[in-house]
Image 1: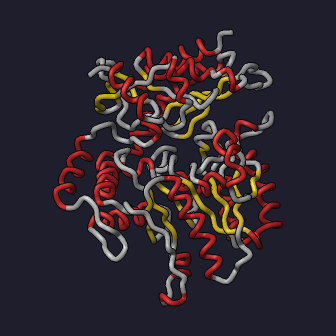
Image 2 (image 1 turned 90 degrees about the vertical axis):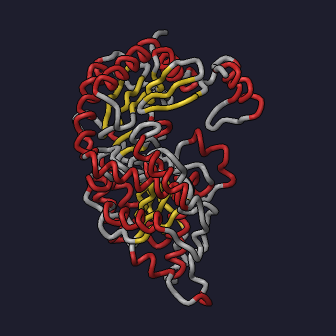
Image 3 (image 1 turned 90 degrees about the horizontal axis):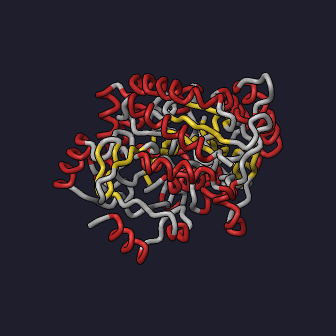
Length: 449
């Protein structure tokens, strides 16, 4: 078996996600044979440093021995069982541990299969809560500009990235979208906290007008990942939590991409000192091994559904593989590694190396911004540095960086004109510096006219 053989077979039967398949007429895909640590290896013996954690899911490296061993043990006991009317030890242990490490007050865990499904659960649960409480007029949601929450229809509706959303507009519920606190849009002399406070005034006004019909506000805390790794100050979350309490509106924190240490704390909400009404988790939850997501909420929400069967207040939402024991076991092993290895403290050292390594790009003539929260760092290319005029998306400048990265042995997958690093936590300082060098080379190539 070699790369060419597997690619040929793939193109005959597989339709890949987030891909214009015609691209593969001139852009060969990369078949992967095995993974180990930060490395992926193809069938021809080439290695690629996984700078994007395989779509932001992998925390502790590929084929991590500790997680592998935990899954093997569980496989001999129980592979899966229905969670309706049944339970198992891995889901109970995982729920206990998630309640212990997430922000205070989150006390109930509802499981699904992936991040989009978790968002669907949170949206439905919020709406259904208000219905059970007799507030039938609450049917709408508020989201931020440039947000992304997944690609199922409910999750897509509360997002605001046209590339993913615009085609399906006729199928989507109508939501209210307010300008977000994106620090990239700061005015001269303004810092990120001031941007957050200024932009929150729009959210405040929207809540004042529409709280009576609003179920919840949904946000990605601190980093809008699929929206180009745009970042904002935690002050916005503090103001939003206070306003949601005042106006009687739920707060949904989508920590699917930013949870589990990505922003410098275990959960991004910690940096604002807030607890949301719903917290959606997935991706890093299982260390990148198996599909699993969870929505955590508090007892006030849980109690609104707790009643006699004949009252028909139960939350009738289910997935066939809800809380799969193998996935729960992978998640438990992932939490073990956080506790055993003092990951958050080590990540702070690694994030400092990342900042140091990317700092020279701030002076690049076609870089408008170098930004970072913890283990997420992004570099935004522009045509004109002074005016921040972007390169037209049709030019696909990021593709040049991607292709250069593969030639140099690095998996860099830019988001349009934004190149970023979001690596597994087992990466070394030397490997971070290598990725920064490759990214710089790629940006130089991409900006040549």
